[in-house]
Length: 260
Figure 1 (cartoon, rainbow, N blue to C red):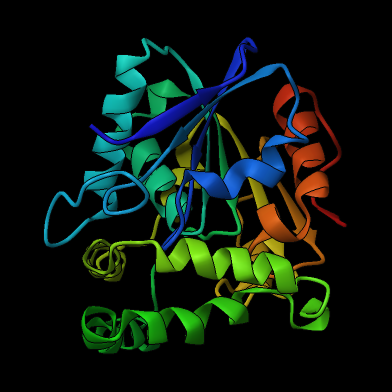
Figure 2 (spheres, rainbow, N blue to C red):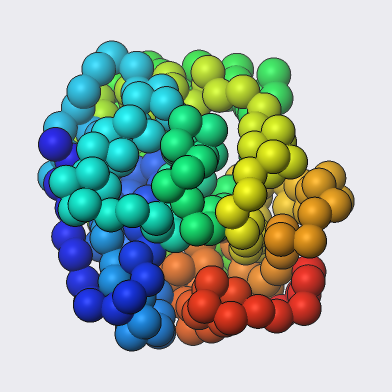
């Protein structure tokens, strides 16, 4: 069973899935601003935080199954599911397997696109350094995920992100990278899912092709997207703005497709 923590006693359950080389602690800043109408279920994904490595390859489908087991232990009927980066990929896999469980799906600085060939090759080339020189891999990659125009302001948050990443089991990270390479296009999930779909994306996100992703969203009334003036880590860079959107969108309604 995956490690998880519960917070709050609101009527609406929001399940939070962190990204690659993160753990459930990443939600601390965002959590402060989330509505008390939410009960939060924060999960450490396989090979991250206090959760064990489950296989040599952690496919998104395997991890979605493990998330479902946690949700089942809590006797939850319908949930709001939010995933950051890799957590978003897992959320899409969850939506494909268990659409009846979802009130809403939020892609939080994530994408429904699969890796293109260049990205796949980049990940495959990283296998060896993750296995043999993981600290170097972390230190080379993490700072680039933040808004380059605010590096000085975000210095403390970048240090926090580095600490969280360096605490990750390198073999757990490797299993997830292998799983991410195998991802397929999930646009059909957005086209067919009946639950509300919310997209939060970063204007300066080097990990996601934000503009192309937003431009290619299906034309459906229950899909809303927001482009925020930050990098890949809205939970650290702009937690109050992100939380405000989540609170209003998942508990109320706002106009479509705003740039903040």
